[in-house]
Length: 326
Image (cartoon, rainbow, N blue to C red):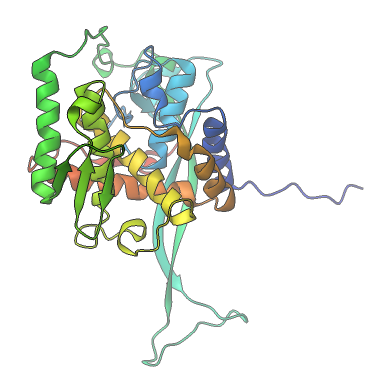
């Protein structure tokens, strides 16, 4: 008789392994949509029924799937929802994993399972989160869905100078809204200093293109969202971040994802990247299976903060898969 039990499925570890696999292949998941011109990944993935955007780590999972399979549509749907709309998923199509992450509170227990009571006679509470898996399909994997659900995907010509100017202006507006100073001078690197709340940038003529200048600037702006007067992230406001340590690597992970998310929002066609951090990111993810969830959530918050400075009414809402679970 076989007494060995099947290991319990670890959703945190499964998702983390997917991200590590992509990083070990040499390209970060948030960069792949920009690497593959056949992908329509420049758009953030959204739920096909509600049109609400997927959030956090689900953006990475869906971008990876779109890149791998060459999907040009950015909309995703559950098999049940496709059936309810009179359509269906084609036979043999494989689903893509997404997750829902729901924080909650519960009474804190001691080692004997008894509720811990505070000095006022009330139960002590602790924060926990439930992670659930769901499966979705790109609408290109479906048949007989309403025609209006599909976006036209023309082959886009290079951006005009006017379109690029609008995107550059959005970035400058974000700077103004954050009251963030930028010091442009001859330099061999770009960096953000939290003590002076200042971004230092090399001169524009030191970059190959204006897009390179603004994408680098955008990465540093994301770091600035972590200042204690803004989102107060440990990697920026604690003073504990040092080149090569875990806090530094984690903050760089947030900055790369946050700037990629914002690029997709405002339509900027160049995403900042720094391949030199890949090994340190892999190390962080291997040591903490929850790290990618935390980093993606903080990157989403940074993206929201920057978009709020544009002082425009949001035309999006984040979508959580358990609102339409399969």
